[in-house]
Image 1 (cartoon, rainbow, N blue to C red):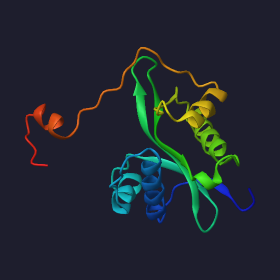
Image 2: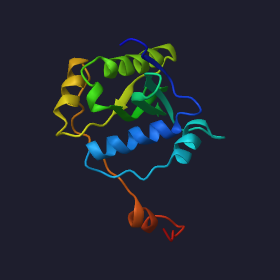
Image 3: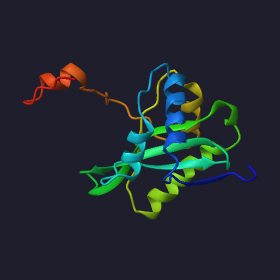
Image 4: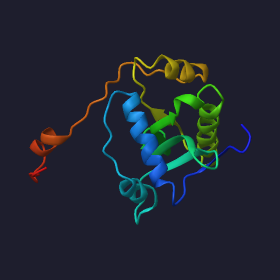
Length: 162
């Protein structure tokens, strides 16, 4: 891990982060359409809604953990939701995922946040082992729902054309 560091995402990282997100989507058998401009705006725009740590090896980024702020109405404290956590396959098993995860946990403790939440696909055995090894609690009884596209439009008073 020489000349490799974990740091906060900064201006100029949007293109590399977008590449990582497209790779991550492909790994999860999905398609990403996000652009560097959208990432730049989400991280550094007038009203940033995302934050991220990256593994920086100088010439390339090896991975990222990207999150947004949440609020627990039961604890009365903020927390984070990990939107994306990805290390390029050729760099896995070298401790970079652990560095990212611990960096975010440190940040949460420093900020006095109540928790970190995330989703993981049930077929991703390596990710499941990674989280279980860190004493992450598997929530039971909760199901995730999503409303998007035509369903979102159908439930809105403002009909969208796209």
